[in-house]
Length: 250
Image (tube, rainbow, N blue to C red):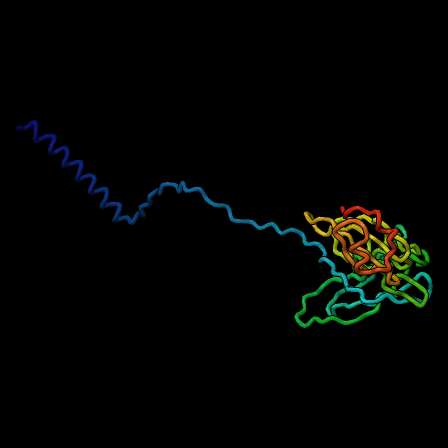
């Protein structure tokens, strides 16, 4: 029995000593500090925004409504429609290959009350303007002729060819006909023209007869076959020499 009492007394002593130590810690008010497990969740780096340097604002182009003579043969005036809120309007002129490209550029400024107004912008050229066309609005041609400046035809220009059968006049009529493909002139003199046109893809060619109308070719008859019958049925004065030996259009 004694062999069991001794270990029990030893255990009781240990517990009593531990209780005494715990009581002593409370009495001395020694703070208890626990060591937390480190946070292993990977952190997220704060997002960053890269600010790209901004360039100059894009420029607009004023619409040219008229070209007027300047004080000498090196100058002219562009009459334009310009927004009243335009910043830094200025002329831009390029001379190359027998033509002059001119326009008025500006920086647009946001303004809900911005309106259009007319304005004049003179410009000068390095060489005399002479008969060189002035190209405005990207494609519109103006030229200096007797009596001042005028808007010129995009195909025959400001000084039309004397020959009415010139390809420039043929290009003019094809543009007016809205043909998608170049046609073929079958016969021509200074007053009459026979021309085959293919206006649209997949469409058969059509023969058209024209008469000279003072500054351009005016169509008056069409034909699906060869010879003169369809043309003469509309205009008996048409010279048969221009059509009698022609085959069908194509």
